[in-house]
Image (cartoon, rainbow, N blue to C red; front, side, top):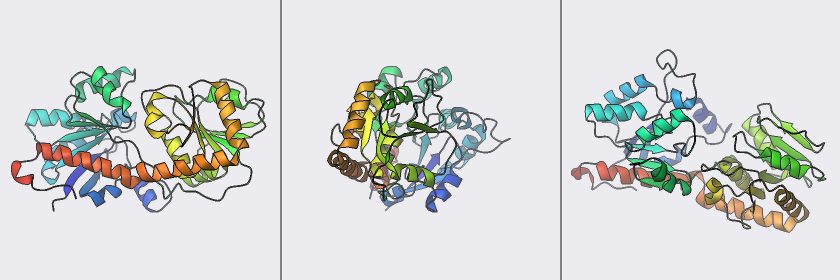
Length: 358
């Protein structure tokens, strides 16, 4: 049985993170790169080059992923691969240009492009690149329509969701009385609403973020701004009685890591009803859901969970079950592998079509 050899392009160095994952020091950040081997995929991690070979290496990942020399070197050795997977829109950009210029046949797939923003350099890149990729793989189903509405001529688009490392993040012993925890760095976190919800409540709150707070903090709210290890982050989750993911409405899956990490830790979850997070939440089953910006709704949901051990346990059990069945590394790897095999079969020579995904 043929194994599909995939060049796996990241916009930033990941090999050190991969080794830390294998040693149990960090959760999986690499799209289940090991788990996908079980589905007949042989991935080879191709990192961006360092300075001076990559002039963009110390820039934003949108630029560091371009890496012209990496693309040229890869183009010269493409006979070793059956397919290229670009993580983010920029990693495969130069290779798309070279494929067109040199008449190369290898299929190129993009995973998790940042759709629907307003940053002009990224939008220009997306408009040029998305019609030239062979398949676009997105995190949330709402992004399928967005890809074709906003980027005319975009390639076929499929939703493959996200994953969580359910071995690293797992239920652990917790204190009888914990705190309300919120974790996240991205700008779509609505910490202003959470702080207002906390004001006047008896429960202690911990917010782990480096986002600025535009309001004074009540005495029951503590913000952790310094960097902490993943083991320390896991301990933070373990000590929480409930995890809150307050969000502004967004097209992308803002908050997905916080939601899935909390599920995996066996914690009850409260989350704002952002468009991009809906694929990861079953309202009133795996999480309590409130409208974005609804301070009173957040306060009521937090009070309900902290006052009812039965409700907290029901949400926690359902969340852990959901992440195990739909968002584990193996489940994600299965969906990703199916898409890669499908793309390869569509582009492969006829004599190769007798090979199929295991």
